[in-house]
Image (tube, rainbow, N blue to C red):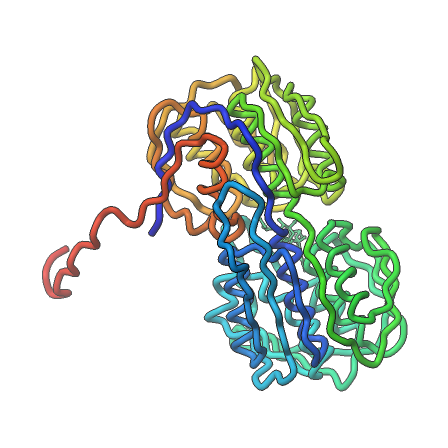
Length: 445
Ligand code: EPZ
């Protein structure tokens, strides 16, 4: 199990390049199911969740090819231009097996597309995960309203529908992948579908952009009301995925927390509004250098500022853990309120072990700063908590060991190369301790 060894204290200086958005790539790869023709996606981040999605599509009979560029990236310059081609000409086995789904709950994103394309789907129910129960009742309710018959048995959703029909669906609560799942179901449904109370995240807009390039008729993506005219079939397309706004935000915090002077390039500044506003309120100096790059400089002393996570365009829940690391260095008391997930404070105890002063009461964490962080051996629990611990280790005195970084590898491409490229002292280590020989089972432990 890989670990990061990080020696804190270096201000991050230079230019770091953002990769494509994992949470755009996942629904866009699933959208390839909707056509027999080839779909080519550019700027796909090479992270674990994408590899899982490739395995999932291949397990159903799709041909998925990753075309790496000839010149491998040096880790410091812009990400090499790769592209992925996906051909779902024949989906010999439209089943999303539990062995794969249990490693990535976003696998459930194939549900709507499989029903729309093949009239049937067998998808393992995604379990909960570290940050919450994460039900998919809204996905199921919407698909049933479009005529799908869905039975839950043996841990699987068995779905069938000769042809989905357009419907008027109002989400009981805003859901990103719920909006994406039903959007993919609606584009091939008979008639018009009206989706209300939709997620407005840029990743939804990215998916709608690909679907439109494939011939879908969609209005309103990025607003809370999306109207879809079903079409008989979709054709192949080539599409470039948007930059990852959460990776960009994570680097903005890295520049601010280390008191550095960092240019975050290859991003889309339009998607960073809430994060830039909050970091400016906390005292960081932030200058947009154009539509795709932002400069962040640390402050002599960061100031406390409260956050409350909201759906887009509010402050993203996927930035809450990273912001909390910053708040430990800010003068005063910062309230961090998590409104989206019920258990997204797993990073708190690890930050406390590094010397942070944080108290949790329900969905609110009270952070008192500035706290002098000391290096420690800490453990990642989920994707964004990992980023929080790395950020804290970048300012802690001494050498920290951040364990189980496979969580971070799910959504951050070449993260240690990118950080090293702007001055961080970070190394990836394989499991340094050889596994102990198994004791014969009949011996006392
Ligand atoms: C997406 O998850 C993202 N994942 C998450 O990013 C992100 O944290 C989340 O949206 C919120 O922005 C992908 O896009 C692959 P939701 P998703 O459905 O769609 C409840 C990361 O770090 N809900 O918007 O699963 C749910 O429990 C990941 O990259 C229902 O009750 O999140 C949650 O409390 C983590 N019923 C809230 O809605 C449903 O049917 C928002 O969840 C669906 C959701």
